[in-house]
Length: 319
Figure 1 (cartoon, helix red, strand yellow):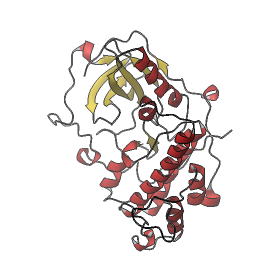
Figure 2 (tube, one colour; figure 1 turned 120 degrees about the vertical axis):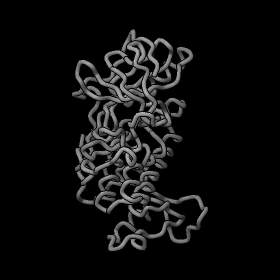
Figure 3 (cartoon, one colour; figure 1 turned 180 degrees about the horizontal axis):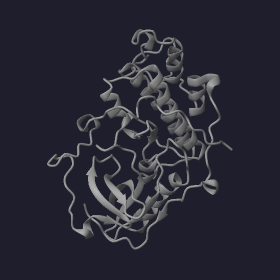
Figure 4 (cartoon, one colour; figure 1 turned 135 degrees about the vertical axis):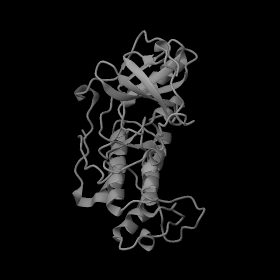
């Protein structure tokens, strides 16, 4: 059985002064990106949560900042579309329950989920943002001028690959991962948002040959993300050696990206990529070498935190 492994936080991420404009979640009154909430009580509550304001939406759902009124903790409430019948509700539960059973520091946990009386599905997670809103890896890289230092890129790749390795070990699949799929908390730790939920909502399998190929493509997408973080550029086919783009860069990065992106002598632009790491564990071995420690996944039975639970009888809310 794999075991939980905590990794160092990305240096400087928790202390970066992200202003409202650079963080992308401007809360200034009148900004069209953050429309005011309806303040009537019946429209600003969801179970024990008071909905405070609208955040930028993600591809899967609307996001709302919420306060748990008893625990006084901040959360994100994801508002999905209406589930039209029992089959759609079952599909939604099947999409969120597998992630709710996995505990890993770099997978954003699902705390609760439910259906409102209007048929819309809701999911609750911790709030990882700052005073100005959620911060994605894409926004942070943009704030840093379009690329990261080798040390920061290593830590970012480590966090994401560890999350992918843990999820794959639990039998889950997400698909291609980009910088917009990764949230950065106030202490500088990265977490993949709603891992695999969109894929399972589309009824794509987590097992079988198709899923195995999706896992390999997912690992390759993380390596591609790492190339962007380090160089600020998209990798061509074959990719330009990063030592030609970043001064005084360790040449071992060339070997890592050559293996992870499937570049081989004679590969031409437009060809189907060959090779690539078979697993996230292989990518971590190539990235960290002997510095690696075993990854540990906390199974559902041993998970110390309160598991996600459906909330019954929650009134319909609108925001």
